[in-house]
Length: 233
Image (cartoon, rainbow, N blue to C red; front, side, top):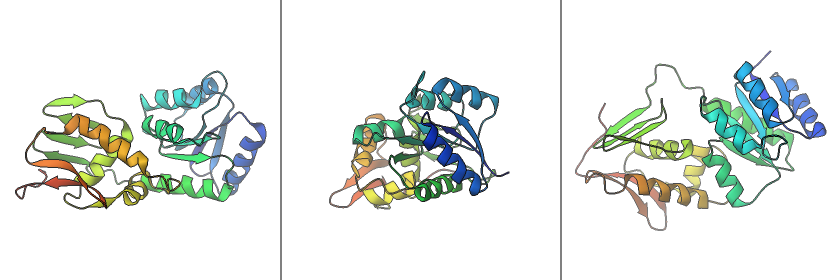
């Protein structure tokens, strides 16, 4: 049996359809019909990926996502009928890795599952820590240290900052960041990048004269290094 997928969905027909397609693709599948059962299944055995509906009985998907993120970085794909920008951004800020809106094609869900799993296949000996003046971005531990103090940072904010800081002075368009950090086409709406950048700036702006998170008007954003500085090893 292949990778273990936990599917949390209270609609019997949808959950069975997902299970059937996943098993056909060689995945091992466990099912949960409400949030409490999902947490029981998670604690019993941490899966390789969670497909998580938001509108669940007993405990909603946002709460499940938050509780999982207290102890684990297991990939989470939110599955929901909610399609408003606020709901999508909120799900991602809670620590979700992707967001699929109902109704959806099963081929799309399978493709997104495979894409998210590929992004998590990082060699164990590959360090994911960047050091700049008064700034440490630790993607191994998902910690942001600013001027010697740990700053609470949602996973996607940290991943966005790490991605830009790992290639300093490179200008990214919003769509590039959506593709390379979130790993999927965000329904053509790039405002979520602006939201994340704005929140990052409240945490790191004016900390050091050696670097800055900059807007390149009409193009996108970059992590700018000044006076030829580079990340410390």
